Length: 246
Image 1 (cartoon, rainbow, N blue to C red):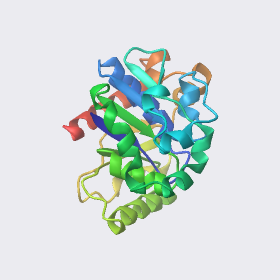
Image 2: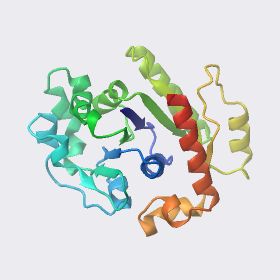
Image 3: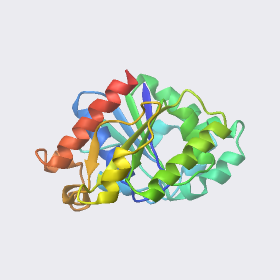
Image 4: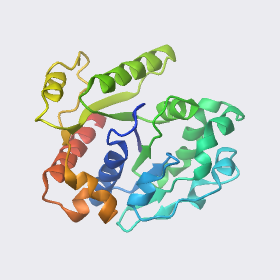
């Protein structure tokens, strides 16, 4: 089972759209796929037309509720969802009270290894105990980066955090998101991105109205506009991710 976190310290960078579209593409390819909406804003849950829960997160973290009990089927074959729970806003507090607080998510996910091939974690935009759980549970971390100065700054902050907390073995997969090739800053930053480790994925997700229309259609781009440029970009990104994990 591959566990992939889709994460950024900064919000509004295309994180949820990435998690939704890649989980859909994995399922369409025949892989048994789960997407877990860990963000209390519940955007991924909304895109898949599932009602967010309003309780249960506390019982989940305390081990009094199995993930199987709260997983919901989506409208797409091979794709299930663990919907957002409003109580996730207090998840840091729950984790602090648990034994081995940085490994609780891995403990919850591990029993699903016989059920799913891929688990995508749509992560809240913050650095917290929840984030550290995600870093220690995931095999790879997808990092959507808007090519702007602030986005590059948050990427450096993440690298410092991982090094300072001695989190190793995590495959970092940064890629450029919401790219507007009409903007000189975007072009300059993409050209000069420091990538000494060769981690940057080749695929780039454009700033496109089709991605914004996901909120209207409430489904992945590939499901309602399979021939658009954004759909092709997500397909390319999914291929990059598979190659990196292999």
